[in-house]
Image 1 (cartoon, rainbow, N blue to C red):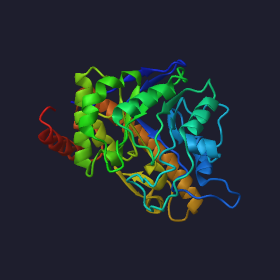
Image 2: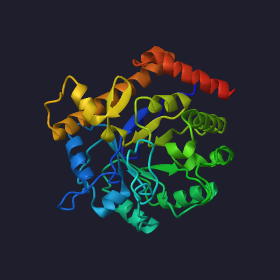
Image 3: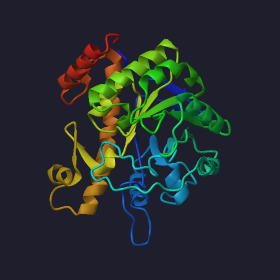
Image 4: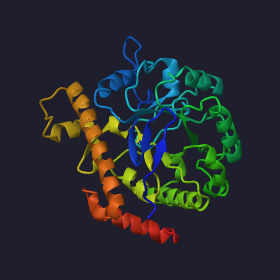
Length: 334
């Protein structure tokens, strides 16, 4: 089985244990109030009451003031994304509306300034720089990330692997396989879900191939899938060998019976909410209950690892087993 768990010791003394589902916040796809305040800052404030272990925010949103700077830690560990998503026309698979996005002013210098201003006492994971106008070979991505992270030895580091040329929509998996022995300077390696293939099975297969190649090279570092945080694909990619998952799905939908559904329908059907509730209450309650679902999903993953028993997934375990069988058929090394 490719599903696994890992432990990473943070230089500031805490321990990151996988598998883990990371609630994410981003100004992209959310509006701004009359005062100019980003809607996501308000959402972050509401959700902070229920967050404990991890969260992901964008360095771009910090730099622009869309999310308030932290004086103290909200969660035990904060993933600080590099900002490439916010300044690109790239949308994750859970996005409903894909507004044309103006490529905004964002640079490695601004990212470095944001990382340097991060409070030294707050444990974080910093992500390597990416930008929609920037394409480099994988080895150049590795070298650039190593140079960036050399100034931040007291935080964890993620290499975010991106397509290498303007003509590529997907990560070049064979290049990753051939270069993964050079990942040893990073604690985590990341990929966006959308850039791993054009179907769920293709993405599962690519994750599995990368995981197997990394194992062959003794690169025992976790794979992080960006943009995948729902009750179905998170489990499927976990079975394929990934360990860390984040995304905005939990802010856009309600999790119920193993699915993600439109939040207003979720509120109408949920026993704890109902059709008499105001929209703002439904949103806040959905966020709270989604976080509980993410905790339960993490527990199911960990229970699965004890005996590799698909029945530990409480919603439709036969579906996940059948999907895994398809993956095994596609990849003969599993």
